[in-house]
Image 1 (cartoon, rainbow, N blue to C red):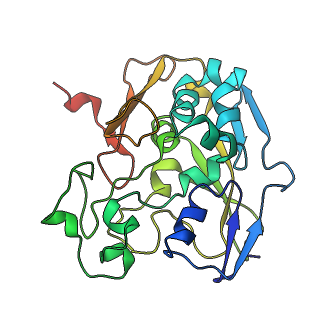
Image 2: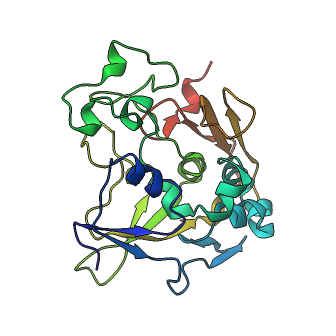
Amino acid sequence: MLGPDALPVAGGTDLVPLMQERLVQPRLLVDVRRVTGGADVVATSQKGASIGAMTTLAELAFHPALKRLYPAFSRACSQVGTAQIRNVATLGGNLCQRPRCWYYRSGVRCWKSGGDSCPAREGMNEYLAILDGGRCWAPHPSDPAVALAALDAQIVVRRRKEEDPVALRAEDFYANSATRPDREVALEVGDIIEKVVLPPRFAGGRQTYLKVTQRQAWDFALVSVAVVWPKRTRRPSIVLGGVAPKPWRIDPDALP
């Protein structure tokens, strides 16, 4: 079981840069790429989808059943980084990546890196959060997380000293970045994501994922939106990305 000085590694597309920037310094890395069933994907219109956390984003972007039943999620996976990144980055790692704020990543003293305030409040804050900030105004960088929140997905977590896994709603999985400096997700030491489950009520329904970036490719969202319509209802589920420390749900009744 993972201890306080050990971290799991799969694709390493976020962990390796964090180590290079000396933002994390684990004494032990545990390779989880060969966990049995870790990359299994099963998707049907009757039962929904079960997606192993070790599945790469490229596999999810091109998975035929996911493209047909959950196109918003499939498209969100296709919008992450470059093809090279998607070929190695895993779903679990993408959901748990740390903030991409330039202050935090560049070694500037901030609340996330051991300081007592967020320099974006009084300094350059372009591309950072505009909603629900506090001590930290870094938006969460995951594209798939936005689609998963709109699809009311469950993130299944294996926890230390608990025999059965714990299922968390995608929205509940993300805490406000102002809550604690060391992480942005509802994971404790030793926890690991096992799989993600998508409910059948959205399967095959109308849905989309759109993303606006500064550059045409290989960039994080200035703003993104996932919109899905459950079957037999006209009330959509709408979630924004790039505007808050977590996926931000919009009440469709409040829209003009």
